[in-house]
Length: 228
Image (cartoon, rainbow, N blue to C red; front, side, top):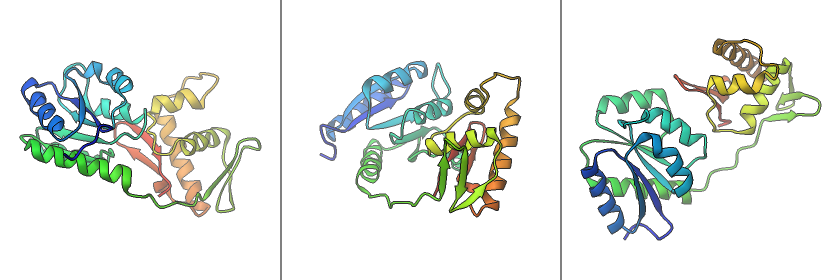
């Protein structure tokens, strides 16, 4: 048996026959599991079940699979294996760099799925992550920020944007999320305003010795910060 009583897999799959096979194989391998067939019920099940890993089929009734993936990521870094019926879809997702932990294409061997689950959980739990020195210094009281001691000359909105992204590294923020958090006065602005602020912030980070890649653009979804 490859799993333990602590390993809990959330299976998101709308085809009962496939879900039943996955449930059987995961159970035989020692994993606890919970099955959800409707995309609209995934987030509530995720929050209630607190799984260690999610097997997420993209083609679901009730809600788009990619949208669901980003919603799950906003609730933490639980590993997600995306399941799709098209090899071309995997190529597209890899190009988008959405950040899934693995991809599986249908039709698949259930034994392979169990092996992938075990490998992803092993990587997620037991591979030590090297400590990364934080090159950014942010003083929320003085509203100042610097890169390795080099001051960033930021506007108030740019400072709030940097503070928000830096304080939740790895979390994906949609443009609407950022607009709601950047403008307290609820002024009328568009999502392209966020793009402009990100562009200016990236430029200033580079000028101070940082990298524009610290702020990653996720096509069709939004932005996240990763100091790697």
